[in-house]
Image 1 (cartoon, rainbow, N blue to C red):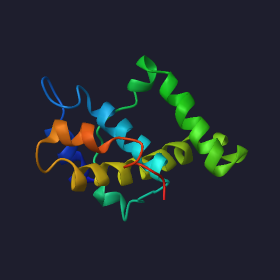
Image 2: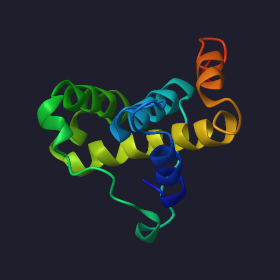
Image 3: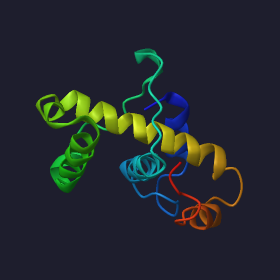
Image 4: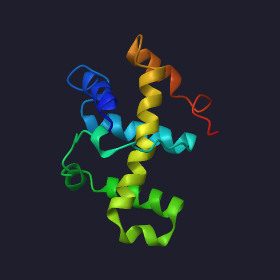
Length: 126
């Protein structure tokens, strides 16, 4: 994820905070990006910070299925032969969603803001 986004997620992850794990914040960003149908690609590899090692997919195997279904729906059958493309697509959606969260929600009263802004009307696509 982008370094600035990683800072946002890290600050809101842990005991007594919005997210118990960084993957939960990333997944919320992914869902927001997909719902709003917006992606934000990386400008360069230098901007990336590794925040997970992939072991989460062993403990939460349903995530792999969801990522594959997303990629299949957006890119077609061929994408499933390229796991990097599947993850790359998800990262772009998550990048948008996390930036949206960071700019829109985490500036004041984070928990209440997140709950108030994550309704269907606010997240309408388009």
